[in-house]
Image (cartoon, rainbow, N blue to C red):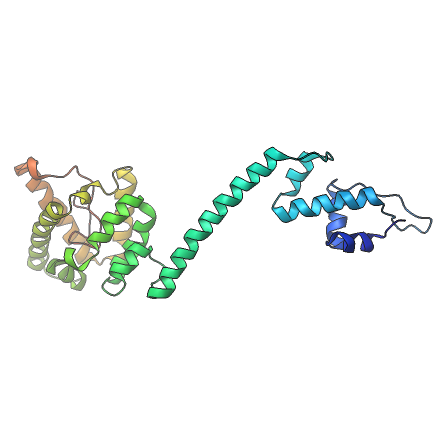
Length: 262
């Protein structure tokens, strides 16, 4: 009793294309041909094809199946490795489902991490939202918790609103006054949220470079000038009273210190 290619594919629950591909990559040996040129598959071919199909369904790649060879013994090590990989995938998918549930239930924006979106979905200005999205990738898990606090209404100050509304042609006195008030707010922010000085501490150069790049693209010339003045005023205060200074890591945008005063 022999089978044609189509018959053996049907018996194994696979396709003609798959059977032919297994021949091409060397997983399934070519059978003998009848006098009319058609292939004739036997029991050994069917058993081999059933094994390939089972391993593929379990998640093995064809290269992994090839490494197992024709041996019929239980491939325990390979199965355990696959099981660990499947467990990691399940854990990742469970996290994805939990995040999707939050997004659907609370109608959160998809460009922000959930912890940022909850506190800032309605209050964030356009630039602040851009910063929040970038910070979601830039900061560690612990740092994101701190940043989420800084996005809350409790952390926001009147100078934040004034900075957001500052026109690009604001005069010199307006800019300097705003920079001074922002420096005051930044000092109070550091007292209330000590963790602000730890943001980006793992790679301060990368953090500063990213903050400066985003700032240059989302803020107008007057706002950028205010940030420059804010840095100068903050450094002057540090020189006058080093005890009140943080370690120099730039505070995040979207709070009372939208720029990089460190």
